Amino acid sequence: MSENSPNLYLVPTPIGNLKDITLRAIEVLKTADVILAEDTRTSGQLLKHLEISRPLQSYHIFNEHKTVEKLVERMNRGEVFALISDAGTPAISDPGFLLVREVLAAGLDVQCLPGATAFVPALVNSGLPNDRFVFEGFLPHKKGRKTRIDGLIEEVRTIIFYESPHRLLKTLGQLAEAFGAERQACVSRELTKLHEENVRGTLAELIEYYETNTLKGEIVLTVAGKNPKS
Image 1 (cartoon, one colour):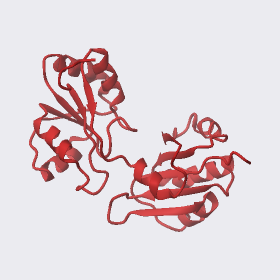
Image 2: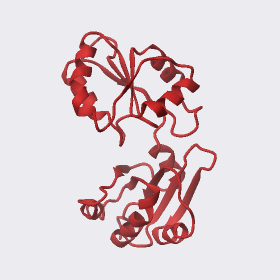
Image 3: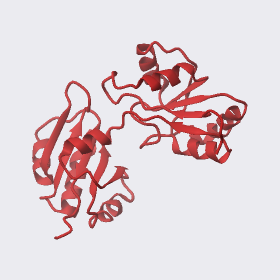
């Protein structure tokens, strides 16, 4: 491991409430040579709010394979980069893993700052067991979706998914079919924002609720694991 200062910082950004940024995150963003952003327009608004003016470069799922080699070369020359996503911690269901892997493979140093991540407050808010859990992120949209769900039927730990509003009902229905309609779950949306909502109940109750209630915003779906005694 390199004993020098990090060449790459992963900096969590607020998932909603702009006050959820750490003092250390602000310090790193102010001093990095370049800030790599998933969407420079979205990140530009945050940086403007924080009164931070540093060079911004686009880094997202569609260009990461093309840019990672050049970024590592620049780090080898001494440039320090900070990677941010649109919201939350980079590399958690967002680009970042590939860059981290290649930077470490080059013998350079990486440091991830602690900070906002959507699944943590959702898990704690859910009221479901949180001593052991598994994070599944987004399910495949089509191919492999049922296989992923079926592979979780015997999972006894609490299961966490990310989901979009227009696919939530489909996912709830598929989980109810695989796990049983009486499995407990919680839908968390708009976390840390003005209209934050955590709806708890069985999968059947959640389906009934969201058939008549409008869905907006980012969603975390937390589902109880299988009862080991059943």
